[in-house]
Image 1 (tube, rainbow, N blue to C red):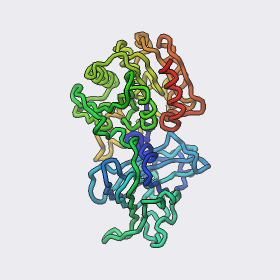
Image 2: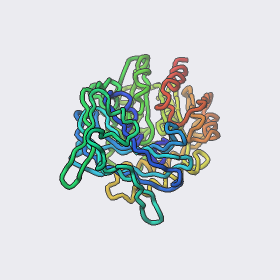
Image 3: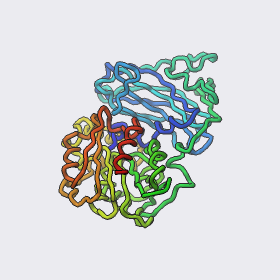
Image 4: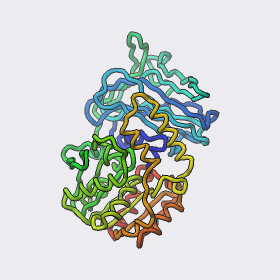
Length: 435
């Protein structure tokens, strides 16, 4: 399970945080909202955005981050985001919703641009669920009507992100809308890592049971398959591909219904289907005995591929995998939050049916018996963070069920160590693969 899908699904899907690391013109403007007195309540962050990116890998989004007493002490399990889809014209309203954590003191309402182009923001609203309705919580100058022309960034935290070379912030007016914020960005250097997941030169498709699976290949050497978590994409491994491709032929995949692997079916998603998709991909590449690194739901798929088709996996690394969606595997709060967020999404008229199916899978899948893992012949490393969403006892059950498997609990790390501490994760994975 991917923690970003437990009430904060979209952030993982969008991988905005990955893009922010690799373009010099990125902007992240923050409105701070007091949250402590609303602990446990549902919220909505709503913003109007107009977006004109200069290329296919630039864009804009909104994010909500919850922090503890110290502003930069993020609650990693409470990130949400919503990106403006490419090709969207004119003004549109975007919403992220979730529940305020018991430890939250503030919410960062963040206006994000990444890459180059022109991006406009207006009407930042914040709402709290009270009974059957929603109560508006004032956001200081959320409509920008009081912003001074000489200082359009007044009232923002992290305003320096919009004052770097190539970026300008200004105020504009429009009949019927009033004053709003305009971010212009050009000349940003986008390095190769920002292209992961959108690289035509490295990318290909393979047809598998009603859909086309998209993948990209980097490097030379023994094959290494990378599988992202639920709602993720190839760009989930933006911190790994370059490091791994120095020694391996990296095959990074967008799982069915995610990234550029658009699913055309309507049936429920399952990890068994995902594992069969990977077998189909490997067959098309005439590969067996590959190494596999699976993060979160990618680890679940890796376990099934290695147990159903032992000849296909030589070495297996799972990070934050689980065998079932019960409270024996995950914290009850996580399961409750997923169910709540799924209900909210189903109530939205324009909700993406693929996203709903992915979220439904979190409550119904996987269904892997510990005994079935006894067929795995791959050398296996089972990893989890010390503060993972997957309960330690459950991680130890996975290790005990796989012949000869090794356990590695990463001290001080969370389920998101792949993105938060790629240097540590890469070091441990490469040491295991090279043994």
